Image (cartoon, rainbow over all chains, first blue to last red; front, side, top):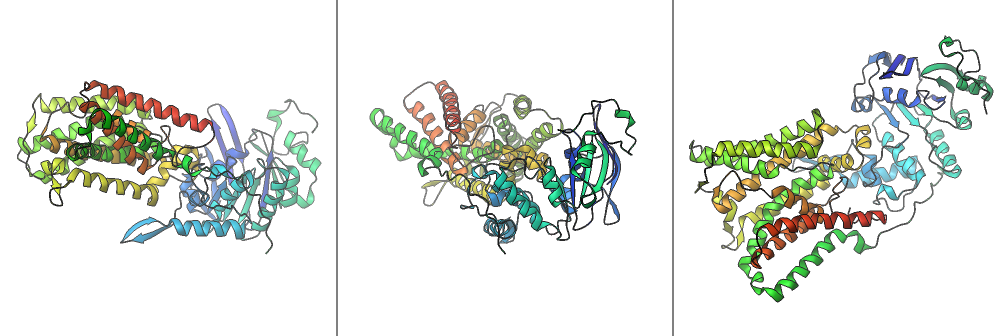
Length: 259
Length: 332
């Protein structure tokens, strides 16, 4: 993604942001509330069209005018709110929008048993999650189970090239967070690039190859995890380190020491 | 490969009777009405009367099938009575005044119905007018057009198969054809709900519109499909009604919308969308037709039917809201 800008009315949500991602890499995105993390993700997944800037995938410029288009390009996301439907079962949620079909007398019908079988297998084997009753409604599931169902939705795609995880541990307790990180660890390095947004710096440091910092809709910096420190990243988040990205415009704003 | 197991969810299974409350509740009411009628008016149970009830229910089953989908998708259609009237009037004019072949005229009625639904759907999705306001307004438009076209006339005596569709019988003169039509439509409804993306997406759209959108579902297009199906169903109901009376005028089918919504909601489809049930709608339409018929048999004025429909909607919605507050859905 190059030079992405997006504003809502008078609010400049993103200004000239670049993002690169290699296959097999995990890029962490951090930043304060309102820094533009979720907006950037929604641009990448076709929910919001960018005002400026372009996206290049495997060397080719692409347009992503809709969510459908992003799915077809192999860009999938687990949104912060998970985007699940409470009154559907886990398999119905996993395949929502991408249902398996089979032909009965030439009429394509939903392959409910096939979806149930595949979803259970993905949850169990790739995500290590057992639901007990696979046919229970999603509102009955725990936070970790719901998170797993949301991730499973991305994994059923033929080829996910880019998987975006928006705050995968935000709604989870410490125990479930730990397991979710193990799940992400296992997904890493399988030809797909992963973008993980998180408020938890320790999780980002544990998993990310590179860390990208957004501040007030602008790129505050990108660091290789191996060559940076928590102090430096925190500094970029709150803006106390002089930023090479021409940031004079916001100078004078309440800069304070990280908590 | 060793895998971490994510903690099991809260084990909270609803007791079976609560899960089927949407069926059992109306069934209990059906039994109650039966008992009351057995005491006050045993003629209620004559075969001819049962047949009348089911014939009436069949028309509402056709409407209720589509309405279940519309309401599940967080919509509502108050214009179905007018769509039925307009479709039937146009069909009648084609047959009586323009001498068009009867099947072509019936096809025309269905096209008009689907077209009215398309207009509703486009206004709702493209002009972003709320479903309720759109269909309430279009109800006036369609009714007005029907009145203009009919110019006060009562058109009657139609060629077959229109009377047969409304009141014919098969299987040795025992089973009314409208009941067969109602059952076929019910099966189509169950099929749509369980085996097609249209049904599943309606649940997603009504349950969580943003999730549906983020899943790549074209919400607007699906909403338009719901209203087109509803319009087509209304036209079919209009044809059935025309056949039953073997006559039609522009003022028919006034109470279709309220009666159908009442039946759907009684059956356990949630009025605010996200959950619906075709079998519940079947029980709902039978219950409503029984109530209507009982009021007639007891010689209550027709207008009491309106009172009954209204009371039943309010009672059902408040009952299901009560269940909801207790954290247990009354229906799937």
